[in-house]
Every structure is written in structure tokens, then in C-alpha cells.
Length: 265
Image (tube, rainbow, N blue to C red; front, side, top):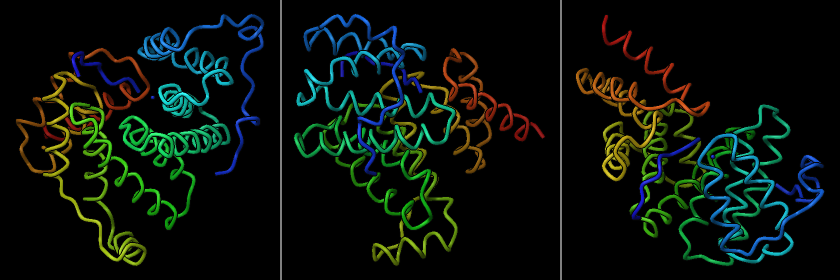
């Protein structure tokens, strides 16, 4: 992938129902060409405050570039960012649904583009947060399916292994009733282990050392579950060296304080 970027964390609603973009931003829209626009939005979203500005910039250019694949998956990604930034449940649901629709459209246009599959998987995960158990399992199945396709197409992308690790970790903790429901829907019981989750988190770290606070937190959790306490503490301590930038970083740091306290008992 060349440059390793640290991870910053990103139904039938129509785009026309979007929550209003601040008026001041739209009074004069500077028309950018596609390459300049894509570079600008990628740069902006490297910081938390830049994510909403990146989203607004894409909204301003959606009529011009809505059929360009590189624009389409970034627009879906931006809806995922807005989902993450929003604290209002209705807004979150709105952003997740539109983002999923956009990313599905992108996959249909470019089935061999790994970014389209990556963001479709992520947005299915977001949509599933508002669903009952059966639909949650359906979306979980879609998440895994498209994540695996994305990994084949983008084998050097650390974010994918972080997501795969989280999926494996969650599945390893499923209750009997959740596994039974999944087996009824798909004919097989989903299975994974903490070891498999660990393997994916280690892969993200190998591809991009110091990748993220949340990745270190899950590495510590996996090692603690496997009773490898020295390794768990090692990753808690490494996390203290990383900057705490996003809401997710802060939550990971809190969780690691708990892990360290429990390991020192």
C-alpha cells in the first residue's frame, strides 16, 4: 500500500431527505476537478473535525461526480463517518441506511473494487445496530462475506484485518441461542475463536505498526482471554504511547485501564 495510515475512527431513505448541511458552507461552492477533490477529502478525514468537512465537500459535488466509482465509495464512507460522529439515534440510522444504499450501488458498478466491498461491509454493520436479532444475523453474514472479498482485493489494508479480528472476536463470544438462530438462517453455525481474532489483529499490527488504539485494546483482550498476561500488558503499555484522537481511541484507552487493573490483581 506504500504509505501506512493510522486508522482514525470513520433501507430506503433517499438522499433528498438528508439532514441539512450548514447553509454558510453552500453559499459559494468552489468546483474542484475529481482528482483534486478525492485528494482533499482523503486528507481532511485524517482528523476527526475534518470528517464532517469532507462529507460536506462530497455533498457539494455529488451531482457532478455521482457516477464516478472513486467518488461513490468515498461518499458511502463519508456517510459512515457521519454515523460515527453523530450522537442522535435517528440521524445515525439515516446516515447508515443511505451509506449502505450508496455502497451497494458502488459494488454493482465496480464488483472488483475492494473499497466498495469494504465500506458496504462496514455500513451493513452500522445498519445492523438498529435491527432485531434475525436481521442482525443477516447483516452479520453480509458483513463477513464482503469483508472476505475486500481482503482478497486489498490484501495489504490493515483496517480490513482489524475488522476481521473484531468479527472473529464477536463470533467467539456468541451465545448458544444466537448461534442456533444463525444456523437456522444459513444452515451452518458461525464459528470462530479468540486465536483467530488474535491472528487478524496481529496482521493489522504487522502491516502498520502502531496502527490504532482499538487494535491494541483487542490484542490485549485476546491475550488476557488466553491467559497470556505478559503479552496483554505489553499491548496495554504500547497503547499508552499512541495519541488519543478519536472517541473510539478514548473508549479503547478506558477499556485498557480496566484490563490492566484486572491483570495486576
